[in-house]
Structures are given as C-alpha cells and as structure tokens.
Length: 385
View 1 (cartoon, rainbow, N blue to C red):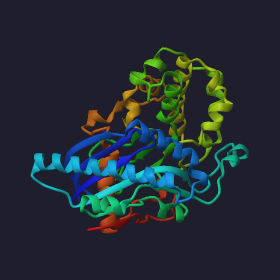
View 2 (cartoon, one colour):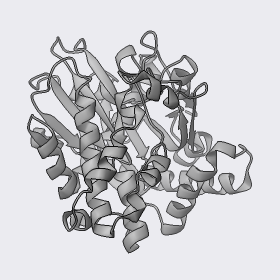
View 3 (cartoon, helix red, strand yellow):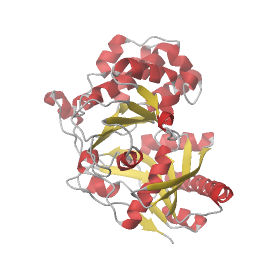
C-alpha cells in the first residue's frame, strides 16, 4: 500500500509530508518527503487557538477559518508529494494519514509517582483531545481516502491518546541493538523505550518526557522576534539558572508514572512561577534547553533497563544547546536518527502513513505500554475513497 503521511506538530511551524510503502506492519520503500511552512499569519492564528481551545465552540468562525487554511496547506503538501513520488517511482498513492493540528490535549489522570501528595495536583478531569483539520475536505481535494482522528478512541477508552508513533519506531528499529530509546523533540518531548524481543513482540514503553522546543520557541519569539533559537545560538550564549531549574524539576508531572502525556501549554504556569521570565534572553534560553534535557533524564528513571543509545528525531536534534545538554545529562550515547539511516525531520509524517495503513486494516495503533489503554486497540476513522 502506498501512503502519504501528514504531520503538523506542536511546534506549529508547518506540515511535514512523506510517501511510504507499507502494509502497516512492515515498511517497504520510503519515498520523498517535503515540509511546507505555514505563513506567519496561519502560524500566529494556530498559536492563538491553543489559548482559546479550552472554551472554544466547534462552530466558532475563527476556528472554521483556521481549519480551512490548515487543510488547504495539507492539500498542497499532498499534491507536492504526489508529484515527487511520480518523478521518483512513476507511482501514485492509495491512502492519506492526516493527523491534523492538536489544539488541546487533556488526557485522563496520570498515576502519581513517589511524591503522591504533590503529584495529585496534576490529576485532570476525564480526558479530551482535539485535533483540528477537515478530513472530508482533504479527501475531496486530493481524491484519496483519508485516515484521521487517531487519538480520540484511545482517550475515550481511558488511554492517554499519545504517543502514537512507538509501534512505528519498533518496526524501524527491528534490526538495531536493544534496549533502545527513541526520543522525539518537538514542542513537547516524547520517548519510546524498546526492549529486547522478537520482531513485533519487543516490549514498548512510551510517554511524553516534558517540554521540549515549545517553550524555547516561545522564548526566542518573545526575546528576539525569531520563530526559534536558530542553531542554539541564544542558549549557547547563556548560562542555565540553577534555582529556576530546581523549581521546574519539582513539577509533579516528572515524578508521575507512565504512561502519561502533555499538552503543549501544560508547563506555562510552572515556567512563570519558577521565575524564568526574569532571566536574560540568553540565560532564559540556556535554562529552557537544559530543562528539556533534564526532563529526558528524569524520564529514563522509568525505564526497565538503561538504553544502549538514544536516537533523537524532531527539530530539537538541530539545536546544539539541547544536544549538548542531553549528552551531559544521559549516560548512554546520544545521536541523531540519521546515524541509523532514518530521516529525523520526516519520521513522524512517515509514521502517520504507516498508521493510516493500520487503520485501514483494523490493526491496533495504541497499546497498554504506550498510552495506558487496557488492551491493544484500533483507532482512527476513514473518509473518502
């Protein structure tokens, strides 16, 4: 099956698209990839949706306008990938995997960790997750069936609804030495720990580690007007503030037991109360980069066994300040996924191509060790075709 996976992550910078040949279990040819950035107005409006989402009505006119523009940009990405796939293979596509844009993620309560009294503050109301994007419009514009709404069934069944990509990480890593940790650093960080076992049967543990690029992007935008800390230059020019880091590392989420997941804005109040806003632009960036790495180190305490290496994908791997902080905080080697032949920019888009095939075949997409759902379960919906 020839699929096109689409991913618009918590960094809100654009849509990644990738062509993948897969049956949802094995991954065959991996084709072209493309990233189409959002224009500044759409990016600004999507960021505003994050703030509005808790009280936003589904028929809100501003939401509808954002959804139309977002979907049009995804359709542009599909068209471009189809052109590239035809140039490469003289082949088209059979199915689209459309994640949409998460504007709200409020999963069911996480389990307290060792500090149960404070971790209880992190408990939330019954779960809700909201990804926006018009799958019906995308199917019509592309004239292809679209798999979408990957998370809501898992949340409704008591799961965290995230992460979704671990089953794809495991397929890609079938021949690699294990235990292995695959770390994705988008707006929020998430990790997949893959244990030893036969292909398709290796134990998986996955969860969100904590804030990653999201707070650092917001900080760079506020401090310098740039959309992100390019090449980590802002963070590398500063010094991490130990007192602020100490307060941030006391957050109950970090002690809570996995599976667990985050909304992009879950740490906004903690960052403000920790005093990050009083730091210089350089020291604030350095503190946020170090905090990202320390969250990952805290996450490693939940693994059954130490990983032999960490493979890093997502935009965070391009920030030398973050990668340097990870190397200092973790005991095993930290490497970008490119060292094993993966594409760290397109990996999540490729994963949603694989997940689309699993949706079409009725295969599970979430598991007890990845989202906390009681048993492996199917998810997603299909439209068009």
